[in-house]
Image 1 (cartoon, one colour):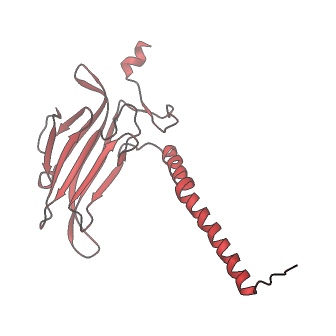
Image 2 (cartoon, one colour):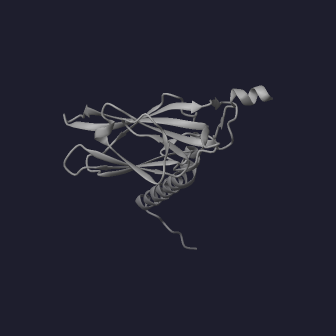
Length: 212
């Protein structure tokens, strides 16, 4: 019979290595499975945006192009509204190389009505449109994302307003930021209609309620 005598330091080292491996395995499982599942659950449980909600779009110092999308639940701005498409409206913002000037290219993935700055009429988007940041100083652009269209008119929609303003950053530089405001959910939001995916139905028109 042979007795193996393991030095204490080696025993401690093996124990530490085993503990480190266990901790590493736990962190990997948490990062790959638990954390994403918790994030998805939290996202689905999040409340819908309310009228008046404002999202600020600010460029990082080294960034020259930014893509920002408005859609249902997988876009940058989540409306959580039924029949609103993913990437229903996409804003591709490009900064001038030397100046604090920007160009916003708009692309519609769904039915969108657009009121350009310094215009009074809303028109259906055809293809892509472009707005410059200079046009947004002192005025706004309005986007009406339609979920339901009847006789060429948006019967249910989410309306946004885009504005631009200058601000002074932490290092004293004058920069520009864009303010995207949810102005209206028409006819309303039915807060009792939440689905398992966290999507809400639009409220009914008064004419529909009267008919019933």
